[in-house]
Amino acid sequence: MSKIRLTKEFRFEMAHALWNYDGLCKNIHGHSYILQVTVIGTPITDVDNVKLGMVMDFGDLKEIVNREIVQKLDHAIVLSNRVPEAQLRQLEQMTERYFILDYQPTCENMLIDFAQRLQHNLPPYVELFSLKLNETANSFAEWYADDNR
Image 1 (cartoon, rainbow, N blue to C red):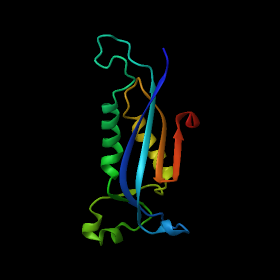
Image 2 (image 1 turned 180 degrees about the horizontal axis):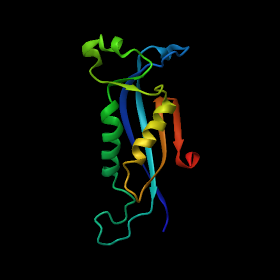
Image 3 (image 1 turned 45 degrees about the vertical axis):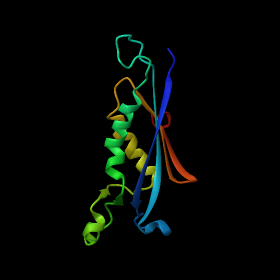
């Protein structure tokens, strides 16, 4: 049977700053991110399965990506653990949603993180094929499973 790729798109708003960077992105700023998640698998052929003909239910993919990525990062500030967290906490109500990561929160590094989160949560009969993360309307990074084997 043929392998089929499914793609679902997600949108979220997130702020970040790049620690020790030599350009404008060293300042806290936000983006309207667009994340495309593509999985690959074989459509279910078991006539007794309620998901007959599906590689994966789009609703199940949506639930996983929302739980693992979107709900956590939407309207949050994301910073490297090299940023003094005490200074961030002084902003009080403006930093109710923040994440301190063990990496520089670039588009590239976030894709590596997202791939790991999703690979551990997908059903065993479906594989993560690729991720594409638009940081702006004309700038994006991509992750492909084949490039990382």
